[in-house]
Length: 286
Image 1 (cartoon, rainbow, N blue to C red):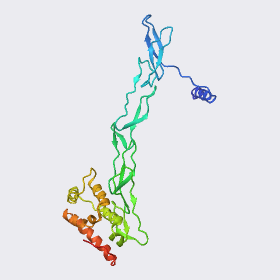
Image 2 (image 1 turned 180 degrees about the horizontal axis):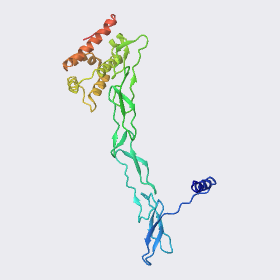
Image 3 (image 1 turned 180 degrees about the vertical axis):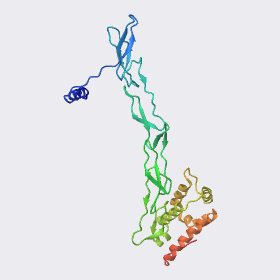
Image 4 (image 1 turned 135 degrees about the vertical axis):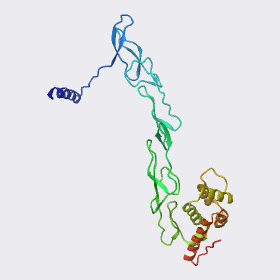
C-alpha cells in the first residue's frame, strides 16, 4: 500500500541528486476575454514584477519589473507594484533595505527593544544592581542585586556587578565596600595628605549611604554646588572629584548644616577609627 507513495518521492529525490531541477508550474488566474467572453487561464507575474497587460487567447500576460522603491513579494496580477512603506524612523533602523521582491525591514536601534510595536530603551540597572542578562532587540535588560562582595556605583544597561578590590600589602581598608561602592584602600597618611585618596574615600562614603532626594537637594543647595543637568548623586560625585581640598575637609560640617546629622556622625566616626588604628598619623578631624 505504501509503495505508490514512496516511488514518486524517490523519483523526485533522485532527480534532485542527479542535478535535475524541479520545475514548478507558473501560477495562473482566471480572466474573461473582453472580445470573445472566453475564460482564460492567464499566468501570473513573478515576485519583483507587476502586470502591465492581461493575457489574450494568443499572447501571455505582460509583466514589467518594479521600479525603485516598489516591490511585489508574491506571484501576482497587480496593476502596479506596492510602495515600500516601512519607514525606519525614530528609534528604528534599516535591517534589510527595500528590494523589488521585499518591503523594507526595520529593527530597533542598539540599546532598544521591541514591545507592542514600539522600540523602548533598555532598562538601566541602578546603583547596587548589575546586568544579569543584556537586553536584545526583542527583550529588555534583566537586572540583579549585587551579591555580597560585589558592587555597582552607576546606572547602566550593560555593566555587570564588579568584585570588591582587595587591598595590597602595606594598605588597609579605609572604607568597606558595599553594594554601591568599591572597597577604598590606602593608608591613614595618604588620607591625611588629601589628594586622590581623600576624594575616593568621600566618593565611596556618599555612594554607600543612600540619601533621600530632599536631603540631597538640601546638601547641593547648602554647598552652593554649580547647577548641572544630571542625577543629584552623580552631581555630588562629580563635585567631589573637582572641589578644592579645603572644601572637602569641611564636609562633616556641611552634612550637619544640611540636616544630614546621621551621615556626618558616621563619617566622623570612621575617620576617628582610622586615626585610632594609626596613632602617629597626621589625620585631623574637624
